[in-house]
Length: 114
Image (cartoon, rainbow, N blue to C red; front, side, top):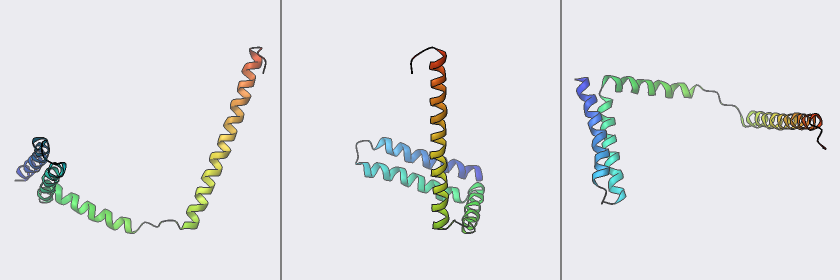
């Protein structure tokens, strides 16, 4: 029975896409509604499959887990961003210095005027 439901899910998705293509002369709203109805019917049908029920439980547990996340305060976020920007600027200057030094060394070795 589960395989039949999964086949029906696939059929609804295909029907929505075929409806979008078949209604090429219709308004875009009608074409998009065709896809949305197909996907909505597929989602409703998938909810009653074993995999769909497992996915629903997973989503429910994920929602509960996100409530447990401790987000940084505004002050912590600004401080961390400041450290990141300072590091980026320091690294850019360091790499510019190394690049300039190596370029001068190469020019010196090739006997070119700087």
